[in-house]
Amino acid sequence: MRWDKSLRLDFRFQNANVVLTSQTPVGIIPPPSDPSEWLDGYTGYYVRLTDGDGRVFYVQTLRDPFRSEAETYGDDESSPLDYAILKEPEVEFSILVPDPGFTFTLEIVNNPLQPEIPIYRLARQSFTFTIDPAEFIFPPMVVSREVEHGAILGVEKIIDHGPDDKCWTICILAEGYRADEMPKFVSDAMKFVDTFKSFGPFDEFWHRTNVYIVKVSSTDSGADLPAQCQDGAPPVSVDTYFNASFCGAVGNKRLLVVDQRTAKKVWDNFAPQAHVTFAMVNSPIYGGSGGNVPVFSTNGSAALIGIHELGHSFFKLADEYETPYINDNPDNYPNLTSRTQLADIKWKDLIAPGTPIPTSRNACAGDPFAHPVPDGTVGLFEGGLYQACNVFRPEKNCLMRTLTKPGFCAVCTRVIRTKLSQLLGPDAPNV
Image (tube, rainbow, N blue to C red; front, side, top):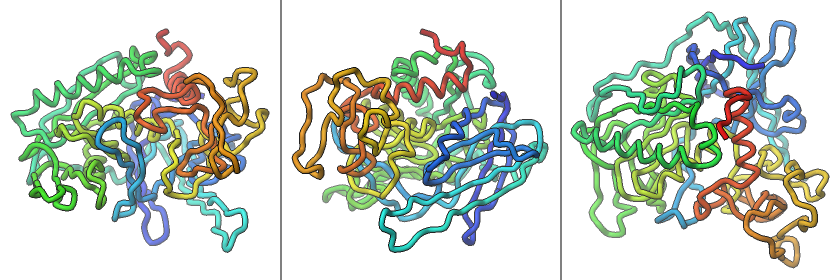
């Protein structure tokens, strides 16, 4: 079932509970439902919608909405990705769900990952809400067009491929641009658009993609460069609307962050029709980060950061690199698996006959090996989701593993293509 109207719901974690803080109708297509069978054995957060008869009509899996994290990058696109923990945990999150036109029950479920030999076990959590789409509850706090260090100058639709309720819509927020630099922002945004529209498989859906920009002026240009990341050089402090700063975590200069809460409020109030929103920071220094609003600089190579983060935020793709971070379940993600038998691999139909399974193993398997297969071969390569052992990815390389390959693997490409086809309808691909 497809819908052409949505509800944007904002939640806050408060006193060990989840509370609904706002409910806003939006005239755009909601993300398609994840298959209900995905919930069998799913560990982590998901949203489930049921009608008055208790029938499930929509499911959406979520990355942990309260995880305090940011993805970091090196000096250029060839540097590895890793994670840094930010000081402040996330206490707010937003989801977009269908507006079915009737009152329904929304359940946020956390089914924790249990260790194989548990010292303790975490209880399954469930937070239930009755949602009446006719209500307009506590709309997001309206942000002022003018603040101490900047102003909202306006919203512009720079790519118009049709009504927003028939298209996939993205938005770009300006950060670190003075009012007299708005022409530069428009030019920078179009450079990103030029990269994005030719990037597969987004190029197949470009004729059904709209792009908005929000012209946000700042008192100063650029972003902060704190002393701890300046290698002895003087710190740089600038006044900007979203308080952009490099070195969002000690020792990670390329971790470029913004005030996510303010960015989200600008998104809600000035571009609610956008499915996804980015913040583009006016700095030639390579950097970026993830979050509700992915961030990237105007460095020529940083566009790949935004596209990588989009793989997480809208398509639920997992990181495929091995830098240690958290214990997570690879079987929750469409581009990872813990299974090593061909019949159990979720992308087995893309594996050519004769391809060795596993295709590579790391040292944790005993004797590491890597079969000599051509680049682009779909198989079973060990390493991913912050672990070197017992997690397998589809290809040797992918944009979800490293920015050295400026493209998605075949499995990630299929996930993106399938979701956008479901979102836009069977006639969506323009190939």
